[in-house]
Length: 264
Image (cartoon, rainbow, N blue to C red; front, top):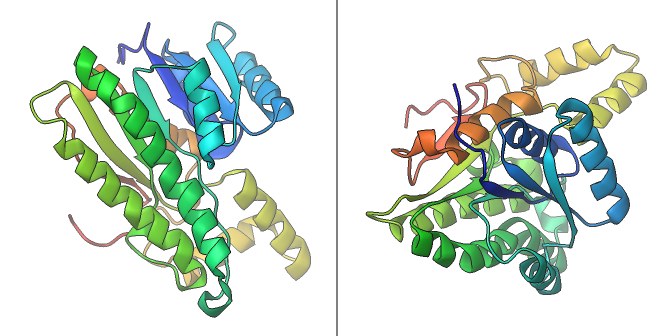
């Protein structure tokens, strides 16, 4: 299927690794001009080189900016005044007991995971509405529905993204602009891979055994019973970013391997 993304300009925040990198690669393969974002020039350059190895014809632009800050967002706006597709992928996570999470940590998670998307959407959405076409996609998580006790602050920010996406979608009524959220489940990203390898070494187990144990004990409701690949997540995002998804708006779309048991 041709996703009709040629000549579309897509910004993927936090796209130097993991799900963000996979989304950027997939959009580039579909013909979009993709803006790669990271906090250091080294990582942005490495991501661009990696994408070009997979998609030699990729049309890419690199922007170095910490989009978890106001200054970083302003730097981006100066270099990229408008886009057709905004993928709010930037996010941080980490396990920590609730009583040990300080105010500063709460504010950091909210700034990076929520306010980055608020600032970027506030800037780009009006221009999308003016041109009567655009896509905004928030990369949330199944943790926004199943709040994990070991990282409540992360889960709260992912729930906030769901509400933000739906609220913004309400402002697009009668237009060709859509705002949706995508909820990945456990995904084999760069950080997860390092975690699995480290745990396997620590417990004298194979990575496959660690993965099997994780789904038996931590995510037993998973129907997939394995980590999704970043490419599997990116495939759904690419469709939602395309003109083909014109009837999908205000939705929370799960690519969680069946972890969430609710049918709506």
